[in-house]
Image 1 (cartoon, rainbow, N blue to C red):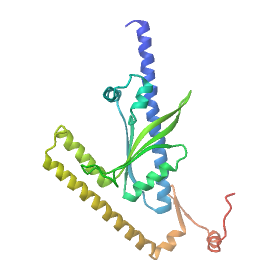
Image 2 (spheres, rainbow, N blue to C red):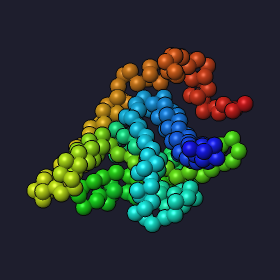
Image 3 (cartoon, rainbow, N blue to C red):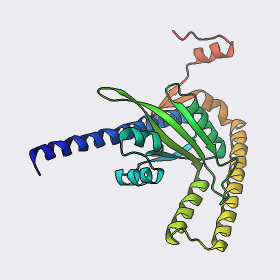
Image 4 (cartoon, helix red, strand yellow):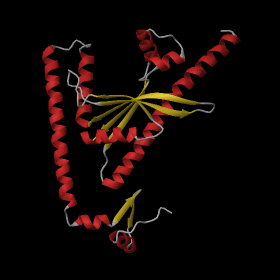
Length: 250
């Protein structure tokens, strides 16, 4: 390989690296937002709506294969405009209501632009698949420019996620030629998972109602726990709140 070829290879490698870094940084931005929202919800409502998150980047090989299928040019601008799921973030929630809470919080982030919403919970796919999909545009600040990067977000419950994982494994095992009987059983399993989600949410609301009416509720209202530190709200502050006085933000 000549020196000119080596130099050209280095430039191409750097360009590819920078391109992939944009999507990695976009995922990092979203994961930080989700972490903040989850902690805020935990501090205010004493439970975590988000069980866990998982991010992934398509490999350059997978990107090219999809680009060939779409008939796009082999340029970075073509890849960016034709392939919207290079970066993906999966958010697993405790309850269905949490899914829509997370979605609303994403929509309320002023620096995010929601490009598309696909609600497969209210309108499940024919095979039974349920999840809420958001396509969002995330601003990423590089050393020499600002980029707006697309990330696909999938938000689902634990039961939905378990079903989707099982369905993926079955399709992989049968090389996408799944027997009709198994497909029917998968759809029935999706319906059972949906029924379980609704039942667990109802139980959750009942437990919360019982907790709110317990004798310990008043004492808990007087305590703050932030970053594993416990604070007691001063009596003077409680009196101000009881008198209906408003505290200045200053």
